[in-house]
Length: 469
Image (cartoon, rainbow, N blue to C red; front, side, top):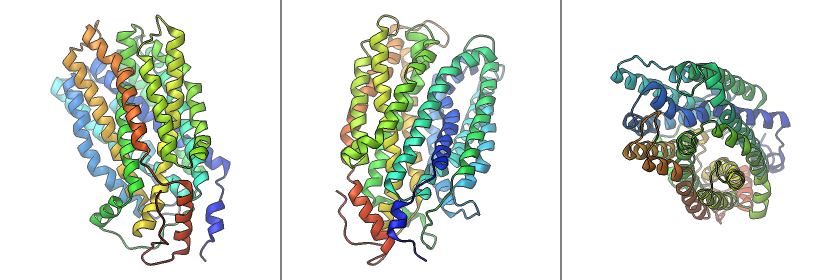
């Protein structure tokens, strides 16, 4: 029996499921945020690999993503089990990915240089694949838990708040934990692998909790298997989804490029790597508050893309101002604007992920094809391409400026770190704010589309004409 429109639109997700869904992103960050913030400095300062090789790896690995992201997305859409389409990937993929994470941080300082590069490339490639097998189905899971746009906003708020807490905890504890588990410095191999083991266990446990306490209730329509070409043409007609992909590309480029720079900035510009932990502790409460503010801004704008634009604008302005202050000479102003930048960024982070499941319904209404995992694969790929470009350009700029591991850096190198921390991401966030204004799928339009889908009126899954304002 077909469920009523009221049932679909008013279904509430249990609180424990919202909490569990948030814990999924806690797990994701105990792998990926750890990798983004610390793998580059592990490669250069611990493993002894040059910046050129690291930059090349980060760029070439995206070709691998171009293959595995759509493949995993399509496979997850086709998965049929007693647990649903997406949850089984969390159950089985998490422990395998945790093992590969540990291997990535297993340094071999005495290995010949060419074999270091081979080992780095193989383990990183496997990590990217493993993370895709977990994170992509996890992200798609939100759209399978409910079609209620407000419930989805709450799920993504839970996810973002949990992620901000996890990132804060990781950034606060990692430097002292690596030192404690090793020889008292940040340049030791033993400390990194022991921390990787701890974080791998957390990664697995969080995803198992998410698997256990969530439920897929949105059943896709009975359909044939669509060829890749037909799915690509359907995606090309989904204008809100294209804006979401552009937003994720910019998001990955700005965020991960800056995150990779953070530990270098505090170690080599401010002269104290321990400031990274204090900086992370200061911004953790603004992170939580900013993520929690998203539902209010969404209600005011009635448009998740416009909410993202508001947050992005103020993130950029705060980061540009941050350039003029230092934690050593002007700590009050430095940490004030650092907190503001993180507050607004957390709101953007929540908004940009809240957009994604709504685009699935729009695509289904527009084309008759519902392919949650396939669409999320392109979201994931765009984010990773952005990350690769951001981190690789940072590595290339560092190499060009004359970076030398574990040494006093030249003024040119320090300026690269300083601008990558503040002005460059600041300007890019302002540009992103303007771009996100072109996202036109508002709440009123979305609700009408869901009703059209429920009634299945008109031909080929298309409902009454609804303008995407």
